[in-house]
Length: 194
Image (cartoon, rainbow, N blue to C red; front, side, top):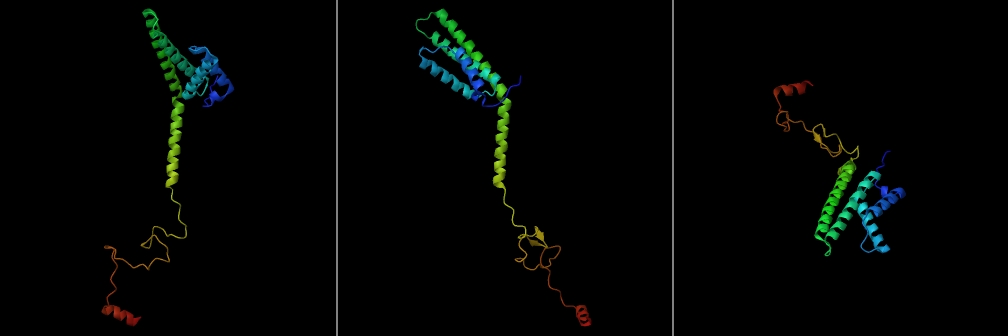
C-alpha cells in the first residue's frame, strides 16, 4: 500500500477521523470529567498534531504516539506529585513517566526522519525560488537594437553613429593621433606630376 504525501492529510475526512479516534483512545482522561474538559483536551491534542504536520497515515501514527506518550508521561508525573501517594507508588509513577517520555521522543525522532526528505525538498525549492527572484530583479532590459553599435566600431566607443566624431588615425605603438604629413621635395614632385 503506497502512502500519499500531501500536507493536507489531516484535512481529509478519513485522516481526521483516524487521528481523532486514535488520540481520544490513547490520551489520559482529563482531571475534570465534564464534556467541556474532554473537548478542550482533544482540541489541544489536535493543535499539537497540526504542528507536527503529518503528510500520510504512517506519519500520523508516529505523531499520535508522540502526543499520547507525552500526555501519559505528564499524567504520571502529576500522580507522582500528589501529596497522599506513598513513596513506592511515587517512584513507580516517576519511572513510568520517564519511560513514556522516551517513547514520545522516539516517535518524534522517527516522524522527523520520515519528514526529512520532504523538508529538504521544500527548503531546496525555497532556495531556487529566492535565487530566481534575485536573478529576475537583476536583469536589465536590453537597449533598442538600432541605437548602439558593437562595443568598438573603428576605434570609437559604443555610442550612436550620428554622435560619433570622425575617427582620426592613431599611431600603432603609442595610441596617440598621428602627426600631419610633412612636406618633402618628393611629395611636392608627386603632387606636381599628378
